[in-house]
Length: 141
Image (cartoon, rainbow, N blue to C red):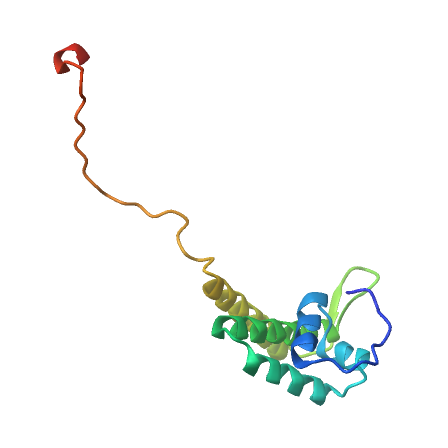
């Protein structure tokens, strides 16, 4: 979890707000509190920043980051570890599974957008003829 910082009274621009969330890892609720906004105002500002993004891939990556935060928040909000080390969750299995599946889809989409699933090396087949000048071919055998 990020280090708590004091609330910032200066209203952020949509882009600054979005960058803050992406770089600090804060949830939308934490960021809303920091900037003295409601959660709804924060979501609207982020949506405006996404609409203004110059690159569709960048826009989609930003959307994925927020979706990932939401899915993680669902899993973390109701999960704790007992003193014995047992993991206890207060949400039903269907909700947990949906959040976990969303995280898997987000990861796959991010890999596709960033080109991480592309082959690292491509094979190229070609033919070449070499001509050695100044050497008698019979001397090579």
